[in-house]
Length: 127
Image 1 (tube, rainbow, N blue to C red):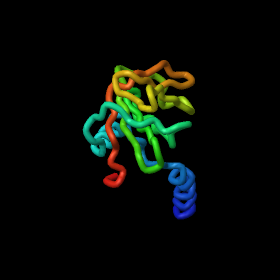
Image 2 (image 1 turned 60 degrees about the vertical axis):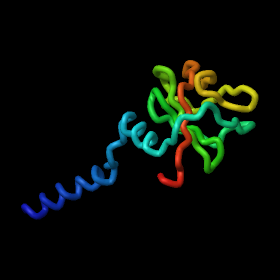
Image 3 (image 1 turned 30 degrees about the vertical axis):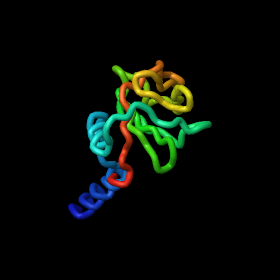
């Protein structure tokens, strides 16, 4: 009888184990990780038309922007960029074919215009 109860109890744990996943990194941990692979700040980057290769929300103060498949930048914002991690798409303003720190913004549905404070190239080969 004890063996049957133990087997049933153990079997009931399998669905819980199957659904378990490692804990998600906090925004602060993500930002620290990306910052570790970021170079010195740059004034601007070339804007690749018609759109960027991708982006990753890191926190409400930063995002990673892929201008090409093998070229990415860490963007830090002035203050908080609310709802960044919940929006499905973003746009980036540019001037004369370049995105400038301190002048340009990240925009998107559900987020207010977020001014870019700092741009740092990510070393993708080191990651």
